[in-house]
Length: 351
Image (cartoon, rainbow, N blue to C red; front, side, top):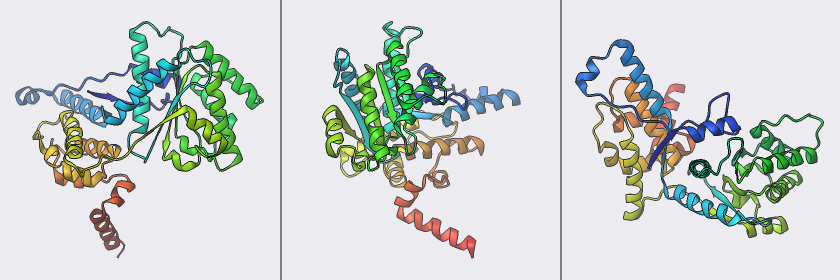
């Protein structure tokens, strides 16, 4: 199943209750593609509006139900059920892996699905706040973490408040609001090797004791940050299940089929007039080579190529149009022949 969403807007980011509520409520319907005769009958204003709707649609992130998303959803749902009557030592999840492997998408989809299911069952009261989503700021202190929770809630706090006062206010309010799932992203911003970073790690553990919710954490390769080392790390390791994420592999036939399925789903979502179905599927090996199997890079590549197809009037994606898209530096550098060509072009421009 494929979903489309924009994670909030400038005024209401996903790390605010307003942005999160908009994300949970979002359900975008793909624009209908009229037959050629009907397309020709559109006025200039109608055609402009139609193209803008397609641009907005392709600019949105396509959420594909990957193995990681399914694993996090299934495991997270069970943790929430197991923790429902736990008064302490609640179990949580840590999603860890390289950048661009779908960690944020997986945990936010878990939160969205949990809240939507609660709404359908009548378990979410109008003034409740079942899910909180925050990101760990760089060089986070315990007080900074508590303030991120307060910012999500929209809780005004006097600057004179101490760490303990902010933490108590946040915990008391989240208990009152019926919070049951806490999502903490960018966990790698905690520098466990420093005193402040270690204290911030302790703050997460303390919050998980005070707030009767399931905590789900995500970050880039957090195993290498020292999070599980020492006495502090032992406590975290004993309570959290680690779900690793990785790029899609392309060695075995099963792995290639899994990648092709992902590419096919993205291709089916396109709304282009001249695109020949199956084109991207035939280029699946090339797409893996370009992106290194990173789902974030693949989504970027296909979406930008689709936007180019609308803007230049070609209405189709080809290998040539894909080649014109510049990806994130990580993806570009791992593709050695392409990186070499980019360096050569750069050197020629300088010369």
